[in-house]
Image (cartoon, one colour):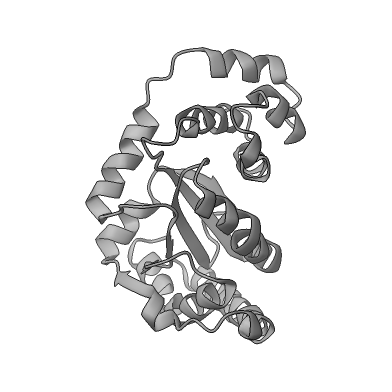
Length: 229
């Protein structure tokens, strides 16, 4: 990594830290949870790099705050997290946050895999983020409203290609890769949230995310420098 690039990353980290401090003050009244009690595991650098591989990305990979999510589109807790905490974090941090989403469809959720497939078909049109949001917005309609309608509501205009994608057989390689990674990291429920290498025990609040992101920023910059990003 060149010095100029590293300096730019540091300055971005400072800016994000300022934004996060404001967030903590704004939501303190809404959350009394202790981030130190929330974090169950600090991933090793090797595990963290593995968590960043594959998955569906929302945002630019050079963002100073990276959130890895193992989720299920039918999971109620995943829906609440996506519609509330995640949407707030994305609105606040904008280009300073990137999300890496890994599929973890639970076997007892009937529409989890079809919804996963729909999100992958949206991804083929570079619309994963929009479909991710729509699937969670209309989560109560899964199995009732056709995925083509949800795709249209998400802003996907080529619904014919989307329908063709959804209807063709899936090889499930992406899901298998995500599940293998989940096993490696000991993921056993959804949503599992990891921010800058810190894995939360329970779905975190915006305050929890902010506190962990601030304290882990230096480590993230060092890891990136070591791999030349």
